[in-house]
Length: 498
Ligand SMILES: C[S@@+](CC[C@H](N)C(=O)[O-])C[C@H]1O[C@@H](n2cnc3c(N)ncnc32)[C@H](O)[C@@H]1O
Image (tube, rainbow, N blue to C red; front, top):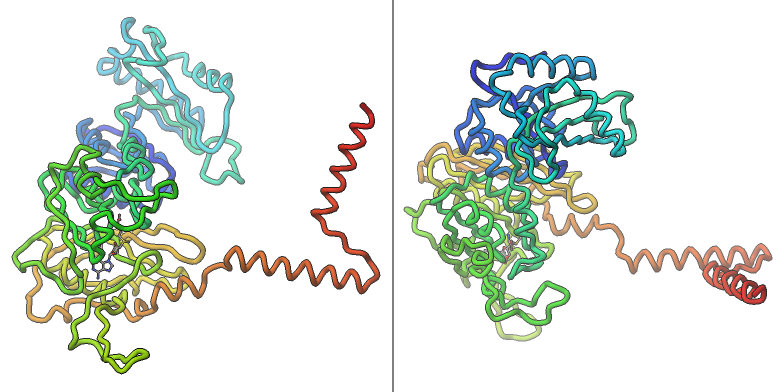
């Protein structure tokens, strides 16, 4: 079905990177909300890297591109067909019908370039030129400029998503005028590889930027990360104009005094800090502060409001999930001595942590403000019931990132729609009992065998094979030794030939 376009609107091709595909729709929805843009999604398959979308005008397209991390580029759509005939028919009629509006692109003094992009099928340069030549009816007058053209068109063929089942003909053929690129350059510019201060659990630049988009961070917002670590999430929020504040229980990490995580670095540099990270990306004027604090014992005044809370809570794999305890809360232990001992910290179980996080967000977010956080889980355990809920927060997005083996995590985006009554926090929040399954235990119980275990198992298997071969009267030869001898023999025979 071809969707009829609203009067005076324009049709665009949105070209997305085929990475973090599950976050694509959520990020797009957030950006149209952030800029208050109306749109119609003409093509419905969100897995397809080429979307066709109707927007009111070019400036709406430019606004989306000014923030999108998933987006490669936006083109003004001139033609779209599911076969070559319909594609060329539409392109011809587009050129005729819009002659007045587009004639400037075909003038003698307007240099141009046509790029051919094919998805899921490779074509040689010669074949690509042949594809361009099929559009010889375009009234091109200007000269070709491959480096700095005044107008750039893209001819795109989409050959499906499955590289093992490439169709006979392309599924979509598109042609459009290039309008702008998305913000994927930030992924490289802000890469952890070159970041001043990082740790073992620093969030990569791409996901941090997506999180800031999910949180609808805009210039002037106040953004908080209660499990701030090395501040990666603050960096992306500040890059988009937010004033950033963080807290973490770990003094050493927060102040960049923990052991360096780069293999090539022996000691931390003196000036490593979260503030220095912001300075590296020229957004240190948006640094508020970071404080050492245990999230289970909140220190913030009730009246403090954040526009967004962006966080990656501890999973207990590479960092501990601990909370500070008071003497009255913990049981006395007597370890190897008669002196009573009161543990100063205890395990901060995931179900308590998420409960605290949702209650905190409901209390401290402004109305319409967003909480964006990760939830780790074991794939066998996942069900929608597992997602923590709060009666004043509405879940607006839930995207999965597979991790290693059986584990994955979900980026949850909540929006605050009403103020909590403030009578009993516990009544407002539901954390399903499936979250009581400790992620750390599930992770290690189901971890694939370690390299040493595998080496030992293989060595045992080889030894069993050798003994069995001996029993059968065969002299088992070590494969490696056999190969070595063979090479030696070859080498000496070539030398002898010489
Ligand atoms: C997954 S890491 C966050 C990493 C961070 N996003 C970054 O980019 O570096 C979780 C952090 O939570 C901190 N943490 C653990 N328990 C805490 C608690 N009870 N209160 C506050 N922070 C805690 C850990 O010290 C760790 O730095």
